[in-house]
Amino acid sequence: MRPLAVIALLLASATGWPQEQTGEKPAIAAPEPERRPRYQKGVFILTGLLYDQAAEGVDRSTVALPELVRFFKKATPLKTEILWNERTLSNPHFTEAALVVLTGDEALLRFAAEEKKRLGEYLLGGGLLFAEDVRLEPVRGRRTVGDVGGVAGTPFDRQFKALMKDPVVLGSQGVRWERVPKTHPLYSSFFDFPDGPPLVSARGGHIRDLEMIEVRGRVAVIFSDLNISAHWGNLEAQGRDRHLQFGVNLIVFAMTQQAAGF
Image (cartoon, rainbow, N blue to C red; front, side):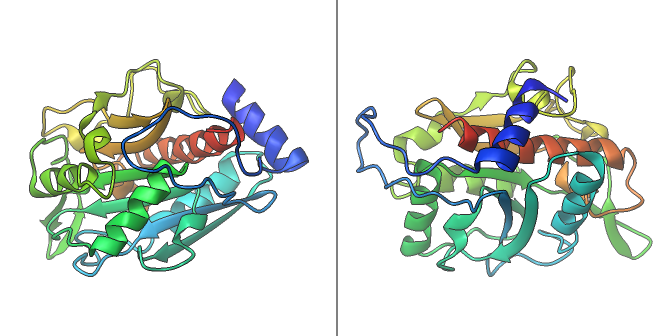
């Protein structure tokens, strides 16, 4: 187990999560949303973001998150209770999530102004969003995971990055994309990924790295063109366990950011 995971284990099982943060913070253009504790003691909420245009089996999978939670419980000794759900941005309980997962391929990302505002408040207030362009290909009359990931500039890629720079989401901070270096704690928070993210389903493309946006030194958004989450719910996917291990790292990384007071 890596040092970050040890911190998460101790805090989750012994002291609970930090309460509301205080103290001065750097000024930003828009008023900073109040930080609210999103956790019950020893509970971690993982939320799949629902939106009207997302088609099951094309843009999202209803089995990906429960399969990831099942794997987390088997693969780690962490005693934190992992709860998963699927919610829209208009749901008043949306901000309780420690980690939100948004996926898409063919869907249009059309959110109302109030929904965008809620997303911006979530990200600026301490939330973590993992967004991914999931690219599936038809095989024998059904859609299944292929090796067609790793392609930049897809419709979902462009739409998502436009959403992040919307003035009521992250504004000018939403264009500050950085490559996630292979030395980043995300790749060692529990399982080791010395070579970076799993690339099994990105062999047909040219992208080899994840991207991120940091807000005041904290990772608020992680974006993937690598089709990683498409393997979580597919029992036949090549290299599935390695992709699930990366999902565990995402969860533990989200835990430790909150535990560290970010």
